[in-house]
Image (cartoon, rainbow, N blue to C red; front, top):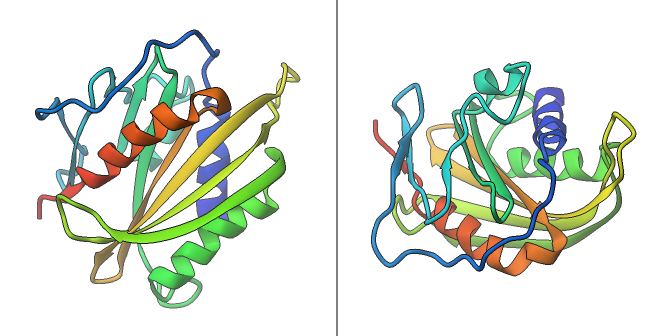
Amino acid sequence: MKRICLLLAAAVLLCMPLSAAAAAEVPEKSGELLQSPDGRFQITLPEGFEDAAGTLDAEGDLDAAYLLETENSSLPAYAVFHAEQTDGTVLTGFDDYFVVLTMGISSGSMFSDVELSGATDYTLKASRMTCRKISFSGVWHQEDGDASREVTCRIYAVDAGGGLCGHFFCWSPSEKEKEAEVLFDAIADSLVMLH
């Protein structure tokens, strides 16, 4: 549970400087395919997104934790994906995994004024895996004392079966919420397990 909470906090720490964004839309045809280093997962990147492995975290800590990292620097919007096996004790299944993710949002010190917008269950298009989408907004506080930022976040908790769970953590400036969410949905919907 502690590891998941730390990963969520670390993901938000990576917010890049906000910049003006051009309108983004999901491409009609397939974009670039991005495969995890372990060869288990693959996503299709929407127009404007690119592989961000090794660029979101100067220390490189997240590269070991997140199997997929992608960004749209002009939006700006970011998505990272992590997967882990439930251990049968703290995490006994998908529902426990979801609860821990939610606790990581609610109890973390990285955010103030957190507003959970709810959770929606649905089936991912490409893989037919069960997904629970958590939406929330809040004020993100940087550790170095720089200005706080209003962000909108989406967490897509995925039940990959056989005790394997994963999640996308996605964030963008609050003023870009609608256009970013369309792209985040597309990324999550494109997730497939390769073996």
